[in-house]
Length: 317
Image (tube, rainbow, N blue to C red; front, side, top):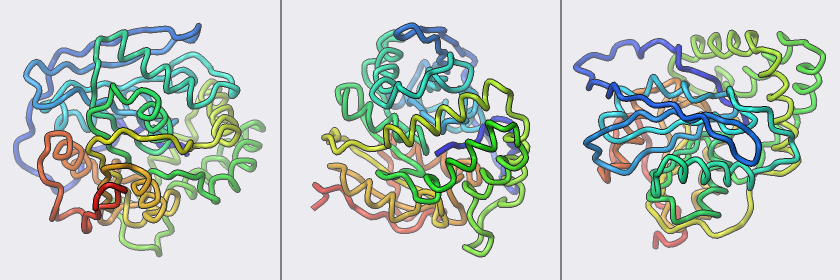
């Protein structure tokens, strides 16, 4: 499950009104975990309304991919993004290192930067790492938000991996890019999706412009995910939790999101209207609003951009 880098994505058309200023204090920390170098980015907020928000994005996202969300989220709290080992600008990580290693790397980062408790967001592959982190180190987690999430690898992903990996290994970049766009984007006939054509073009351009290092990491990522799987039935901390996805997500479908939410003690579930798997790209402002509301204990009921909120956590009653 790979998600696009979208820091260069243009603003949502038709939006107006004042935008809160983003704090100027931005810090980057170069760290190393068990011999693998990686980097995190911290946008500090001196007057936070909630715990720091750790954003774990998809495997093709990097620590800059959430800059477009900062204008709405940074006024609320300190933000942390990271290139974990094997991703972004971090060191290459062989596929024999699985989710437990990446979860331990997240713990290492939070310990090093002095953040004993965070609001945890995981999108797509970031959910896989985030869930394992929450299961292994529950004391670090205040709230959980997962987007485009599932507790099993989608069949369309496992079917596509061999073809995509072969194309990347053979330097057939255009063929791989076409396949990746089809994997992430819903069929236009599935339903109305905001900025569908524009986002598809952004994805196509990103995949075509991958560097040799990015291609090598992408192939290794696919091997890692298929080899290690994405879910272990371990306890999840009983903290406020929200799982959401696009109403037309065909990669990690709404039903898959519901299945994941049902394994969590205190989870709500909803879908965002007029979006597919790339909900945080297609409706960036709205997804930031949803994340910010949940992290500051404001209601997520009856939002105009969401469908009904469902209580699916097994302690929900």
